[in-house]
Image (cartoon, rainbow, N blue to C red; front, side):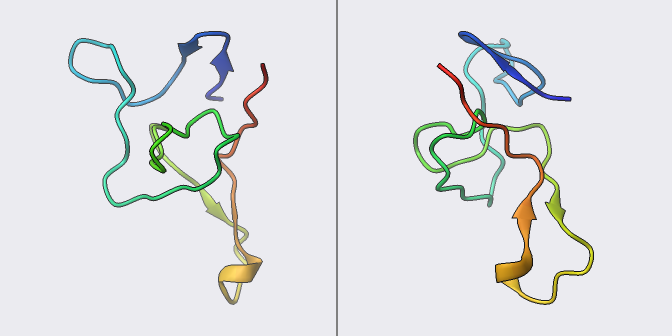
Length: 71
């Protein structure tokens, strides 16, 4: 499972040199306390999962990829 530990990102998209995490194109995220939030409203996770399967509208959905950033 992807995690954030201290000052390092694990299992996130990074540039070709393995440096700064790269965002997923087309995915906008406003959850600033998520470990995958890049500070500019983009997601840096290697993939995202949205559910649950029984959702019938956007209010029913959640981002299962969300992991709270702890300081």
